[in-house]
Image (cartoon, rainbow, N blue to C red; front, top):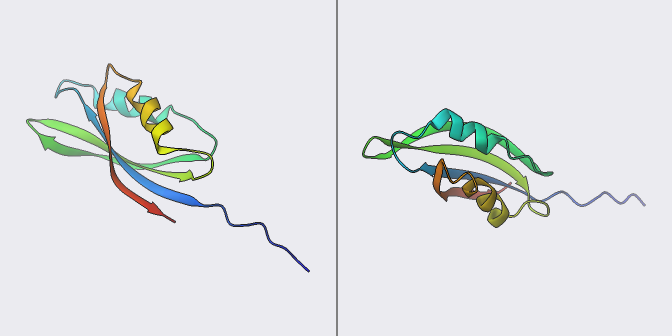
Length: 96
């Protein structure tokens, strides 16, 4: 009898990372976010998304292994870049 390992539960998360104002260096903000390395975290595509008043949010995709990376932990790590990041919102969260 062959027993296969259980499939690893993963989720795709799209985050909107909002800066403080229109003078925030968005390239530096993205570099900081992508510098976060965790076992079970894989960063994907990103783009700037207008939110109003000349301000853009960084909309960035990541895939996480559910057992290894918690959304609360990820949000805490991103908002730790407080010089750049005002807030983080989940735009999309889906199991894959």
